[in-house]
Amino acid sequence: MKSINYLVAVILFACVSLGVTAATDVPNIKLPGQNGEVNLEKLRGKVVYLDFWASWCKPCIKSFPWMAKMKTAYQDQGLEIVAVNLDKDRKMADAFLRKVDVNFKIAYDPDGDTANQYKLRGMPSSFLIGRDGKLYATHIGFRDKDKPKIEQAIKQLLKL
Image (cartoon, helix red, strand yellow):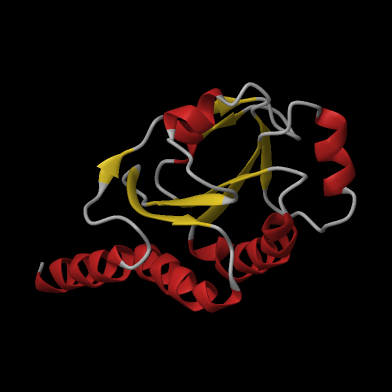
């Protein structure tokens, strides 16, 4: 029990630097996806890196190769990545996706309803959700210097 409490403390410490101080419930997502419906509730039991993006977002272009790398590195430990597109015109999202390798779930929210539920403040925005379905960290933007912190938080949550 002490080791679990220690891990939770480490995760919360790491997550404070990413934008969350305590685990909180997250709104469910049920959206059309590239390969069928994406339902966040069905991913309970996995660690989910939820990313909101748009075709016009320059940092989003850089985030996709990193997300693909994280998916490959940690999928066997229970990591799932869901990237929610916010373009109003699906053709713009499709053109973006032809330029990048994707090995994770893509969902579409052209009306931005899910983005509103998550109170997006910038693009891209990411949310790290634990196996328990609770939010442990948020992050706005995508910068190379933040990648190690985000990966460390993912690794810590995967240990729980």
